[in-house]
Image 1 (cartoon, rainbow, N blue to C red):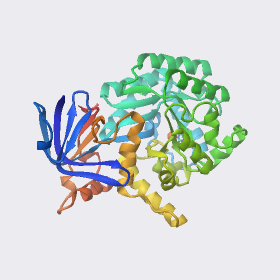
Image 2: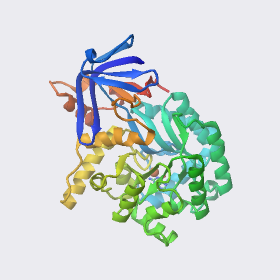
Image 3: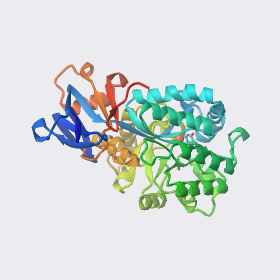
Image 4: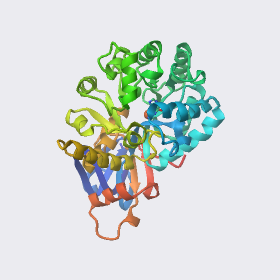
Length: 423
Ligand code: GUN
Ligand code: FE
C-alpha cells in the first residue's frame, strides 16, 4: 500500500551514462520504505489515501553511498598529508586508532562522524572502525539510533604495527561474534562487515579466520587492494605464492566468496581485474585519497568498460573530503588527467559518476540507489535556489549543485523511506 507520494524535480540514473529526468514528477513509497511508482504526474498513480508531499521546485535525487570510510580517522581529516601510504599509516593513522581503546573518546568522535555523514547526504556507508570491539559497538549503535544504513567493520590486524593495535586471532573472532549477536538481523540497516585491514597488517592465520567468519555468518567483506606501489611490492614479498594481490585475498576466501568491496585498485592490472569481474568484487574508487597518500590514478574507465562494479569511497582520512558529491567531481577531473596521459580512453561523464555513486554503489546494500519500483527510498531533497541566477535546465542545476553546492543545500534526507533527522 502506498503511504507517501513525493513531488519534486526528480533526477536519477537507471543505467550508466543516462539521467532519468522527471520535471515536476512524483515518486510513490510504501509502508516498507520501498518505491512503488515513479511518474511524470499524479494521475498515473493509484494514490488511494496516500499523503502527497510537495517539494515544489526542489530537486529530489537518490541519497549518497560511501563504500569506504574510516570512522576512526575522523579527527585526522585534513591533516598529516605529507607522507605516502605506509609511513602515513605508521606515523599518523595507527597512533590515532590506538585511542579507540577508550570508548568515551570513541563515542565523542563517532557521534560527530555520523552527524557529518548525515550532513553531506550519505545515508549508507561501509565504515572501518578499529580493532576495539566495544568502540565498534558504540559506532554501530550510533548508526542504528540515527536510522542510517551502515556496514561496520571491526578491524582485523595483528602484524606490522605496535602491540597496542595487534589483536590475537582468537580475540578478534570472539569480538566479531559478540557484535554479530547484537546486530543479527540480516535485513537490519546496520550490520557487521568482515574487515581484515590489508594483507601487510594480517598474518595468514588472521586472514584465514576472517574468511571463515565471513563464510560462517554470511557476512560481507571489505579491505584495501593495490593502493600504492610500495604496498603492492610488500604484498608480493609476504604472499609469494599468489599471482596477484587480489589472488592473495582469494586464497583466504576474502574475494567475492561473500559480497566484497575493495578500496582503491589503483595498480590493478588485467589479471586482478579479471578475477574481480569473475567474483563480482566491487571497487571503491577513492579519488581524494589517491591524490593524498597513493600518488596514482585508478583506471576507472577501464573498470567500467570491463563490466566491473564501481562506487565511491571518501576514505577519510587518506581522503580529506567526506562528500560523495565531491568524489564525483574529483573522479571526473582525475579521469581527465589520466586521459591526457594515456590518450586512449575517454574521461568520465557526470551521468556516469552519478550512477556510480547511487545505483552502482547502492547495489552493495541491496536494492538501493535508484527510484525504480522495488528500490528502497533513500533520497535527498536539494534546495539549490541560492545557486541559480538564471534559467538553468534540470541537468544543469544538478551539475551546479554537485560542483558548487554543499550540505547547506541539502534540505531533507531519507533512508529506507524514513525521513532522518539530524543525529
Ligand atoms: N591501507 C591499510 N590501512 C589503510 C588506511 O587506513 N587508509 C588507507 N587509505 N589505506 C590503508
Ligand atoms: Fe582506506
